[in-house]
Image 1 (cartoon, rainbow, N blue to C red):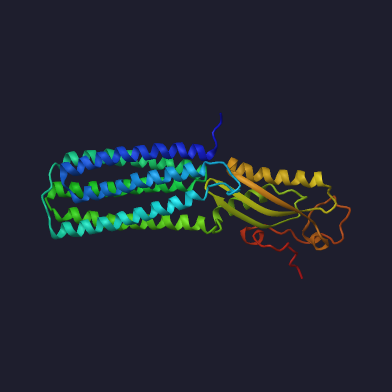
Image 2 (cartoon, one colour):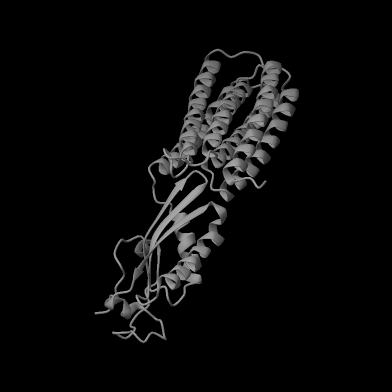
Length: 332
């Protein structure tokens, strides 16, 4: 049986959560061996990885549920809430790391077995990076903010781990213990910024902020495949519910087309959106009949109902197709 996108996203996040648990255990072992505060900060971030991973897993479980009377558009918004929580946890980990780093500067302690610790942490960095890369790739393909957030979180962990390994190497060769705290504090600010970007993306989804990238992709593809019966295109709205994109728009067609002919034009129009976004798109197209003023922007050559001659083709772009007004020729 073919699985739906939400179900596939849920399975992938389950794998991500399992990897997070394993890497957390490895980092705790590395910290126990080295007693390095930098390694401890890495382990603390992995604690967040574990918690956030299971929160994302639960949100994707909710998102995969079928629609019901209470949720006619599905449960996809749960992904945005999950991403907001994960971003908050990432930022919180950054502040905890700063606290631990400052505390260690004031009360330094001996560090040991750095070579073994670097080897263990290095392995976790590689696993984190490739897991994060794959998760982001699938998340973008399936339009899942929860997966993208998880992937970015894992890659952030990788970058901070690389920096921590570099700091541990300097300590190993120089014996400057203060570097341990400095490295931890520097990468804490990077972690806080990543948390902020995740929170910002999730709030955009919750508040249904216009996704310009999605709009530009859709408009570009429609312009490339524009048909002469598509007189006008306006009032476009795109809303994301997790991995599902809802597209609502108005398409103006010649007024004399019958219901079946107008429906054929809508089907052709919808096929473009399906080809661009795949199974994750849900399109609602309202067909409008053209009016007299539409003649001036209609380049249909075989129309025997034309009242005014064609004057100018309106190039559709993100700005004018989002307007609720039908387009008119602006030639004076």
